[in-house]
Length: 410
Image (cartoon, rainbow, N blue to C red; front, side):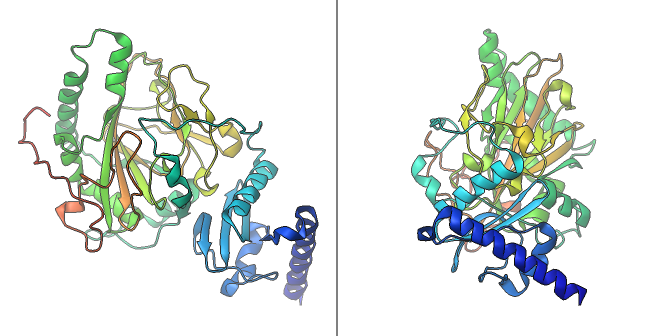
């Protein structure tokens, strides 16, 4: 009897809130939406229906996506779960914006300025409407060669927070050859540069060295592959890699951003494994993640306020979205984050270098929609897991470059 009474209480509250939205929005919009508390979601969505109108099962998706019934919205903003069904993407995005303001007071000031896309790190505006910004909870299941490198509680933590830290991927024997390859590559980049500003830039961004000895070494590491497989499953490719090295005194700030906003992927199914080559902490510009930001959907930009930066755009008011967490790592450890997780790195004001390599992986069912503004096509020149072709994933083309001989200069 108590359960029935509670059920009808929920129905009454949903009916009253739906009436409010109908009157405040106007009946001509025909908006179909229900906002519920997280504790009520499982009961209301049993069988894919709720008490107001038919709604698809949420199936561990977070963001805005298209179903036969319309555009589904499912977000987690702080402790609040938001669920809605809309006739258009524009209506869903407008409701997302209103809920971000209501529950997180984000952004503090309206994002009215149009921000130009980065010619080095971004894609054409025409691809934006083809992209689906949706985080998918990890599917349970062990790695294909070794049971469960990531434990169930770690996968649950990744789903909840959007990142993992302190993953031991390189042991004492594996780390030295990787660091040696990196030191050779860094020396070739910066040793002959006398201008400090140019040295900082040359060291900081060494993009997509998929043909380099260093990346091949890491792509043979079973621990790294197991991390990716435990999250993405067995069908994935390594489409890119970036060496990020902040020399001591480097003033460059990487503003808060979501990687998915810059990559021309049909779905947000990408993952970054950031392998530390130096000890990294808050003192030497360790990455900072915003806990839970991957379940907020696509977040808007403004022009960055930093004077030394790589990305001209930034997501403002990160403190409204969630708790910041500094990635403290020992050399040989890795962090891993979703392409929807907000993150940034500050200037390195210390006397210690901060070096790491970001390996970019994507689930093979996603597609590259077209080239980046700089002409780079991210589906060309990929490294396939363990060198095996993936059936049905011919869209992701294997790198044609030959692997350098061991000890050869990169």
